Image (cartoon, rainbow, N blue to C red; front, side, top):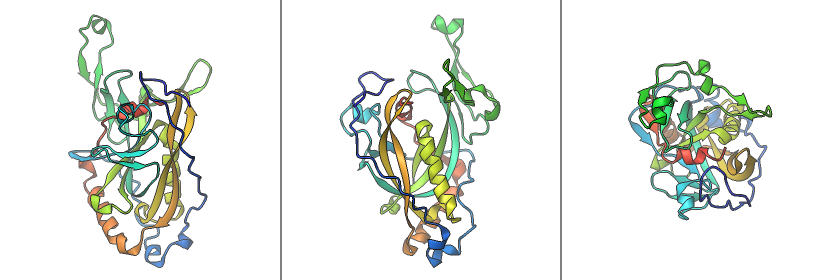
Length: 283
């Protein structure tokens, strides 16, 4: 067992059994007839407009640095509802509705101040940054508004390398935000699965599995698990993804209506980001 670096009093990570990676991709040929008519239709992957007003709770994978784990209210490596604090265990099944990317630059070692962010991962939406000049050293630093900037041209959004030539992730975090329903609990409404940094690899895997069948994103059920992996900052939990089934016909209309409701109001959607800086410390 290893202690996560980056925060004092971090609890030791308890190793959970690794979730086997399934190779089954559920291609279109295996889809039920009621789904095949949707082949080639809107995937639900293209929405990336600005977020406003509607706060969607987040499905969190708890790390040793997460507050509830440090308070011994939950176990690292389990999934939790960010608002109700309900713990779902180390496996959970989801129905993704859509995905939109964002970027956030957090204050390093601070109290979770967002220095800059982009609601579409293309251009800076806004932010606050601390003056790190002479005034800041004297305790008189000002908080100023970050000006508009194209993410592709911003140095904070570009990967780099350390003195040994090893890859270093950008200080501005690119995040895959999936708006999902919990399988078996769709009546509870959508919840967000934010996947930055060490979770980007499983996020890309989820997208690949979704595109493989040539069906809309919201027609398949996926199982998320958790495994321990070693990263630059120490050992942490990473999400695992596998496709397990198609959405049953009796549930398809409800899921479709949720997709329409969210996609038509994506400009007003805001993901609950409380405690996210704690989780980013693992890498």
